[in-house]
Length: 582
Image 1: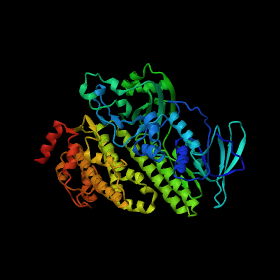
Image 2: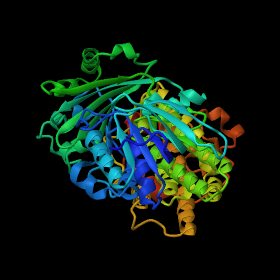
Image 3: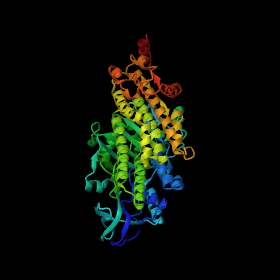
Image 4: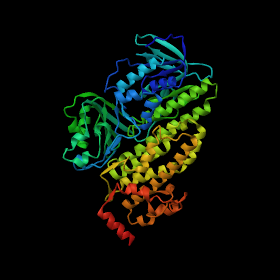
């Protein structure tokens, strides 16, 4: 805790001392950069445990950012919970054990964590102070003057905990103040996300675990997971909504409702905990009963939580990181992923500035990369929400999303390929097939999920690691000792990943046609098709070029067999297929 002189000029002022701001400060220090840094935050320690901030779940990139980039592995292992992956339970009219389940039997090879934000951010504050970063708690930022002249510093106006006003100059300013989004509003860069979604949440004392909702006599169900499902980020899925259950060390639980506004209007479950519990009793009664008797630590709510921007990184020596810039959606727990990418770009720009290099061209590239990534994730998740009740379709879409992430996006972060525009152009050439196919696949999943015919394809349980060896091989590339070591090897891995993704598109398309149009299935059952022409309207197949593939046909029967083992087909489908074949 320091009281800097108003006359002092810093190299960098970070407005906001949460995950994004503190992470950037520590990242810069660990890189060996000795620039002067001031962090301002209105909240003073001690920070509350369990009921501090929302956003407790991480996935592989976010966890890697914490334990590798920020060098907090030992702390994470000792003070927080390792995450048993993402887990999904789809809608069912029977008891909870009858709900189709998508998850993992055991902890994933590449780690992720469930974070108690209060204890985690307390530790980060201690670390940045030890790293000789000036941290002022109880500081409220009143204004930020951006001076776009190359040699002129910006000015941050703030008030300390004693009410004393300060004006601090800085060559760089980063807004990490979260949903206040000060620079976004001040500079006119705010952008709304499509398809409004809202959320309410509780943190409660004690464990709320789905394991307790199924009798121990159901041995088969309990043996699906070797460890307690409580340590997963559990999703309870229904039409236009999902509900999270996230553990917080040592024995508390975060629970939240997320819903499309045009399917479940906010007033149907917000803004009070009483209305939210009433909604749970209707849509997720097992969870509502499980919450009875648990003391509530806090209750929160947020309307239209997702947002984007027209600019988050500028060559004029300012940036927004974390929620102050963009926020996609909590569905895949990617908030820290976006922070990791953004802070990497900010560090690189500051280093270029220190070296006297021009900034504008690289800043344009960095800004475009972050916004494209965020908006693609937002679009992907929001377009799938109406079908969350449809287990087979959403499970296959989730598998598809994992292939895209672990095959093309994650390697760019682990190997820092994303920081180099030249490498990014090479990657863009590799994944060009996937870009077009992604749009086609999203439309296919939407159409498939809304189809009104009798569902012919079903599943009971999918372990997305052990049951899908090809996908698991992609996941294993995220382990430090398994990653390619040269750029050539990294690009070769991504080239192979794109081939596997193309095969998955072929496999899922066949399944969709078999389910929706079994009479048309023989036309495509043994065809190597053009994945850029996929669609569920058979009348358009010829004109779209479905049977004119742009890649070399190959045998993917072993890959297809991985999927075939996981799904079963009804007798009605078998009869329809036999009739079509004859």
